[in-house]
Length: 148
Image (tube, rainbow, N blue to C red; front, side, top):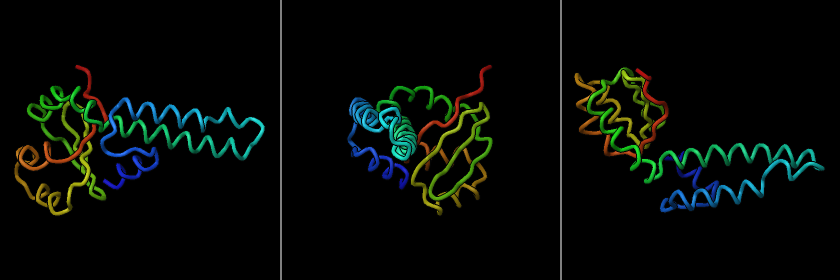
């Protein structure tokens, strides 16, 4: 969740911002901080390059968790969580990553450590995640399924 808040703060948007608003804010900030605007100022150009990289990262991240993005891929997501087994999972700082047998990976934000510990102790991780993870936390897809 901290990462989400930081990216929203960096772009100057709140959690109600839709894709149209994100795109507008992103484009305006990129116009302001594009490195080509600083051709005569080397230090300014380097700062602009760094800021534009952060803008790109924040924008793409927020787009990946936006309600519209989630809605567009909901059918595919539901199919993956229903039909593909969990191959591996990892946890770091309230971020749970689930890797599925089909090659898909999803990140779930704000997962408490106690819930992760219960997942580790579960004899059926897929069932545990269906009940406690999949529809309870903000998530984003981090890698696509392997082509068959």
